[in-house]
Image (cartoon, rainbow, N blue to C red; front, side):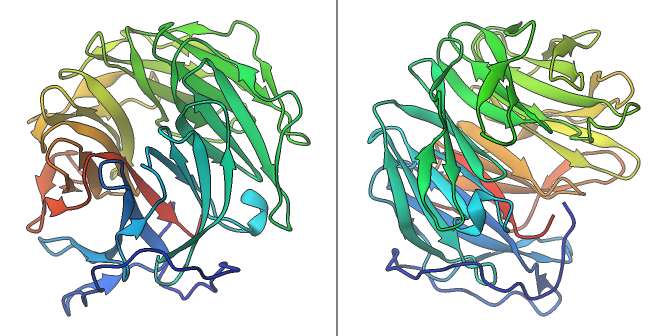
Length: 384
């Protein structure tokens, strides 16, 4: 996604009391706040969401400015985050979707597109299922439920949330992660060791299994991520998806056809550190890098990604040290930086990414203290 230094008109429609705490600190004179870009962490142990706004240029020490009011309280422990902005996402009403596994509830918040402050929840959905992951696709959001299915909801332009007819849709056993393609939804199933693939009906949001689904993965898949989300409408483009396998210490890479079907690339799966939990791509200069958070070995594996073949090659110096029990990572994709949520040490590691080699270097302020037991770090951007 591109970065912009422009003022964005707030999309929030309502302001509610929403936590309190730290005040915003000014960035150093040599750095400038990145407009419309925010980093959120779901802190399940303290039932709140930490929020930061990045600044640039990165001059040896990246700077994350706490959003005023952060951390923001959530009624029950947040475990997963997703979001979108603009009229095509969530009906243009809500921006951030927060799942709480303990209360079987989905909360919908507004994000102030200038300050990053959260208001709400302005709506919530309580279900009979245990949400493990959530993702947004246009005016719909999808929830992977531990009971073996995926719930689908549509957000109307007036803010009304309704369940999609036919929802929930059967998936594999123990779904824990979601990813979307152009018209597809991918579900990583931790207990059946496979990937369920669905075609999305753009008119209704309903899900239909793709022929050949489910596709075999490694042992205990824990995440699924698009490495280079190229448009599948182009006959010459290839999209790839990576699945971290926590039980077999590996990452499986698949090429995705235009109908969503998956094919493992040659050499897949590729070795990782211990108990890989999450993956994220970063675009370098003429290169694509891919990183995996290893929750068991407290580090991050880095790879050079071959866009022609899908093959992952370990980077020199990999793995790179992180905090205790890194469970989630994300990036702005273009030249980083890379953010890693460490659940065991209650902090956020921030790395710069070498555009030429992909090597990771911790910034001077890393790690940053956040709430207790963070389960996910999520980068929210208001401009495509």
